[in-house]
Length: 608
Image 1 (cartoon, helix red, strand yellow):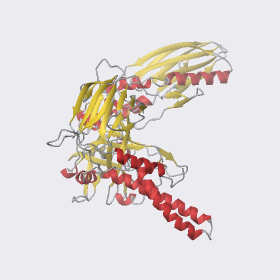
Image 2 (image 1 turned 180 degrees about the horizontal axis):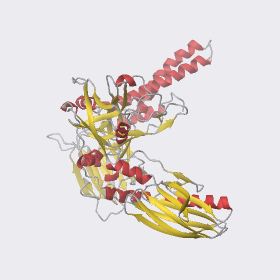
Image 3 (image 1 turned 30 degrees about the vertical axis):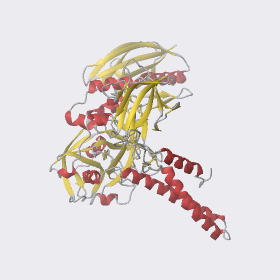
Image 4 (image 1 turned 90 degrees about the vertical axis):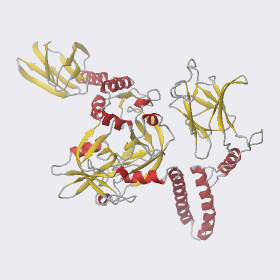
């Protein structure tokens, strides 16, 4: 298909307009089998969504509890701005429409049949019942409603116009050569793509009332480090109460690392009739899960590649939430409300969202923002919700707190609020996929300067679900339950201790050209922050040895070899490793020292 050949899409668009005579009536669902209907239910026409599953506390249309092919929260039907209904899967649950599996979502039309769980699973017929007109007994004829064009439709319309313009350009450049025509074609193509993007964003923005967007912009404060020499913006914050502003934990850590004599302030922009404001930050508190999860994953989580080699997993930041307490209250008109827990739990793919904050890294005006801030608005959609191990968490919605989205983001946006159409905060920006530039300047904690990391073209970015703010504010984070869940997810990876141990054994065998066996192994749990433990070992002349200790709780350990009370070798780390051998039989001690509470295992390997 050529760049301007939109005939197929035009035909589909016309067909869609003919088919989409939407009935302004009640939604009707019915179980169907062998041509017979059962479990018929109708729903009021004003509803925006219908949930289907076995969980009676969640679903609007409940499937029998014994129908185990269907999950508790299986799918949702959502009414779109155009009036059409879409089916949206919950996680990886199987859904088909008229025998065709749904990958993510699909448009529904009256008479369509949904199949759940598997191709031979329960079948539900979707219909819309028109409201009868007074004095009639038949169905009211449907009226054609305004159709919301897709980005591709807009692009095709623009490309057809560009094609006509290029025909004129081609005549003009025939005597000059083809290079000018190609350049004009490239320019026209970029213009059309840009117009398509603008149309998409305009469509998204139209779904948010102006009062919500005004308040969102007013709430976006710039976090700034200021000294006698100058100032440095480090992120975005927003007030959930007059004296407390929310941001990322990594922004709070940048504050902690500031030079002495530097004050921390937050600046509110002059917007929506509010004057520019400045507030000194008195203190900050990070979510307890932020450091705990970092320690937990520092053990290393590995996956095996096709050739058997190991790759260490990487993750977006987790529990990346902090609260800043300010000396003077912000204007109540700048305070944002956090969405209630049920709305956060139901947040899902396709939800339209808006963000306000400061996109500064590598951008013109970064320094000026610290003097007179002006937040920008951006719009997008939720792509997926995952847990902090990057796995879908459909069966553990309380753990699905990493909000994957396509909102534009870069340095300075960290901590910025994301709202849904109700105007309430559902998440805060925390990071995104980036590309590292060689030789570029790296400035830790700075939102300005030449960037070392720039946003990736895939436009996959991350945010922290807003219930993390509630956990921090209320002190309701359950560390024990969270750790148990982390352990369950870590089990999906290769055991990090075995990975390190195997690498150590391979290196030992390669260096000595001999095989090694376990001569001693011991497990111990350090009861306090500082613990010493001694292991007596007899070392035989002519053998090679390796000592290995691994701290399972994430803390580093120190391993020492002593002979006659004198230290011979020492190593620290996670794991800690020693290699040694003696020409005569030797009585020695292995000493394990820890500075943090937790379990570890020590092993002594000897050659054959």
